[in-house]
Length: 417
Image 1 (tube, rainbow, N blue to C red):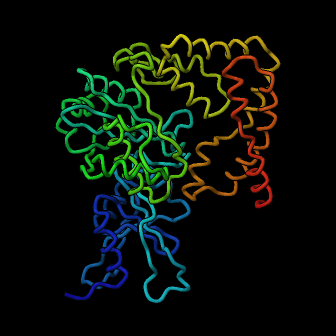
Image 2 (image 1 turned 90 degrees about the vertical axis):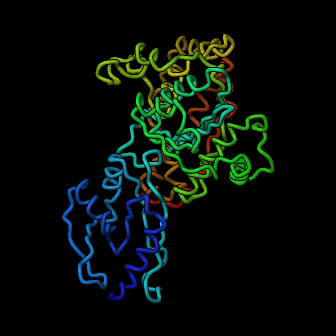
Image 3 (image 1 turned 30 degrees about the vertical axis):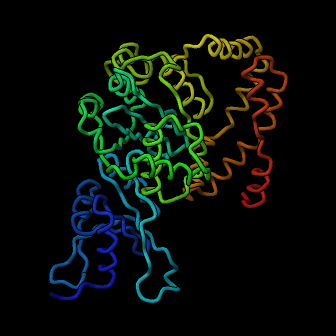
């Protein structure tokens, strides 16, 4: 058998580590797909299938896309159910001795898409992990585009029922689990009713010891404070963080906290009730238009739209919390000038959360950084408007609002329009 070319040897070495993915292999100004990956890519993306010499008698099937426009092609493959491993040149070709070093810098999955062109800015894109054993369950859910990370446990007699209802509320784009969960009735119910295929990623990342280590390493802490009594939540959260580290290959520093919540904190609405009430989409057409959210959403920012959606999906049950929120609503309702000033300032705000995630992923461009700067420029004005607020909620927002003058100065100095 003829010897395989050095470049294809490198390709096979990397592909063997990422057999479950389509490998976008960087060659110059293109990402190339080879062999079975190329056949899939040509079919899904409508690309012409060509061939490349690789030291054997028959040419290797190949197709490719320009690297500067690869995002749209990757998103289409992910929406078609594939995972895409992006393999980049990790050294300067001019300084390379022999074959340029390459490695996978990120794996794009349905729950880890960060391209604003395909994401709904008014809705979170969640990836969920579920851990379960014979004693109970927990879920952990993250939106990597915003850094939001939540977890909850289910250990009561009707744990599986509550777990399913929460999965239905979040409607994650991707669901990973430990092996045990796939054997449960809840996993089958999720497959059938939510059109979502749970994928087991094995048990190692979900063991309490490994999960706790992952959490401690991420937050640079000695012990899992606040989660000591939440063994299932630790397993789910650590398992999800481990999966994100494995696929995203960055420090995920925008995930700054894990929020622990209980379904007892909110009005419990099962999946059928949510559907029948048409809270966020209509029952027949599955459209946002015509739903309760569509009627009341007058938010001025994408961040506000996502927050309002969460409030609609998780109605409060504590009278103190309800009155605290209503007091601030009443203040803004009665103060026309303050309300209009706030609306005007908020209308200038870009999506802080998703820009920050793109900065962490090192995919933010100069335009997005300037958008961030222009948004930050108006934060002092926003804080000034809130200065004389009377309600507790607005006072709290005022006291905690960081106007980020240092970040504004840094971007303003670094980038010239």
